[in-house]
Length: 148
Ligand code: RB5
Image (cartoon, rainbow, N blue to C red; front, side, top):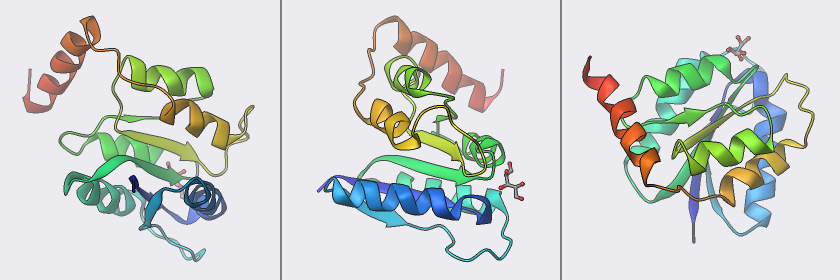
């Protein structure tokens, strides 16, 4: 069964729950490491939890959610090997996979998306990395992790 890891802070409890239920219904095994209480937590801790779990292997991709999606995506992108996209719509979500080979997707629980967040997630899941010239750019992107 395909596995997905997801973590969230207190700013995205409901949205994370929507994703957990949606993906579970679709037949995915969902490892939810996020919080379920509104007590304040720090989004870098949540990003670290999800990314370290993802890096153990066996996951298709990861999802991170905070109030805006900004803090948790920036945090995830500080972790070696993680390419976390914060798409504004289904088009960007699809391109994040096709061109950027993103292995994480971020959402904001307090953001009023113009499209259903599950549709944005679907676009990510339904798209594949196109390789070719995009691989060259990914290689350059990942080389930035070790200094320029
Ligand atoms: C928490 O209040 C909030 O700052 C966090 O969820 C996120 O929006 C940060 O980027």
